Length: 505
Image: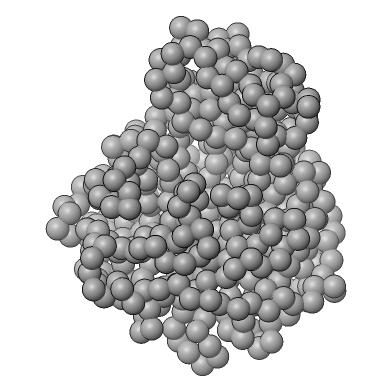
């Protein structure tokens, strides 16, 4: 995970600790200076795959652990909650007698912790289901856990979207073979985890959806990988779905992005500056055969810029985030820099994707695929058997796990990129200090205001909304924010306005 304006990077490390890998957390300020962190784990292998900032300033990390699994080599689901100061609030390991992993974590509609991933059917089975788990945010206790799948195929959940008043849209893949080999799956859960509806879309080969994003105006983006309808070995794809007639969902368009080699999308984020998406991953089409990439598109999927990043060896972006000042962070691993293999790698780029070193413009090709090849279907009878069922999880005893600080060695490859930022004189906020409501007066800039994000003092995103047709003043409900200092970032066309304020109740 990366979040701005300060940065939190979560992953795994084998450098220290008692096991082969431990959960690893590194905190940096906006200039890349180390600000705290640590690692947690047991005698086995712990790997972090996802993290999220919660409204109260805490962070939750999720992944997998095999230290306590009942059968050697199998994984349990692991979750770690950090307090606003960065110290562990709790960590839990939960599992079945098969493989259990988490690929995504977010705050639920009611403030709970929601995890999504994959679970094996049973020992000896080659089939797996998607997994969605709801936890109490204070204690980590399981509220419900559901497996999502079809009896004769494999399913996985890679991301999900909380929908107020409905539940959660979970995305991933299904091998139910309605269209091709594996198809993109859009599974809608009610708030209690039961099935609402499901559809799949894709082409004749393999497709898997990795990220789902809401632009706040009735459109949802789904990004992932397509292994059958692009020009190379595999393409990144982006689809836009119209959910204004929900629960009916209409596929607006489906586009692929890539070149003659192989592209693997790892994550996508919504860009409130243009209402579009930034996609990151790896490509073999450019550079040395193994480069990280970032591609920015507008609301209609049209490429605004495309860049590759890396050196003489293989490098990859696994995640991305806004930096709070108009640019972006790309985070992953590098074999080109640092002297050893698979170093944690962080790149800060400006609004056009430029860093000060080790990046190049890439000629990604954008292709629109017809709806006869990539389509959505709620009514297909085969989908009726993709269901959510109870998946009881056992709480493991983590008393032998330890959390220790691990100060990394940082190699600065080039200095921090400057990004375009307008002074807060273009915006006024009041009252300051604020209590339950904070008002934003945009003046002559009101019609161009597109989005608002608020970060706490640790750099965690605690509030986000799109702005449409603001006349002059926008009032934000900040009643759930704790006392402290905050930074508001407002997106006005392709520039950003920042303002600092205090909450005191």
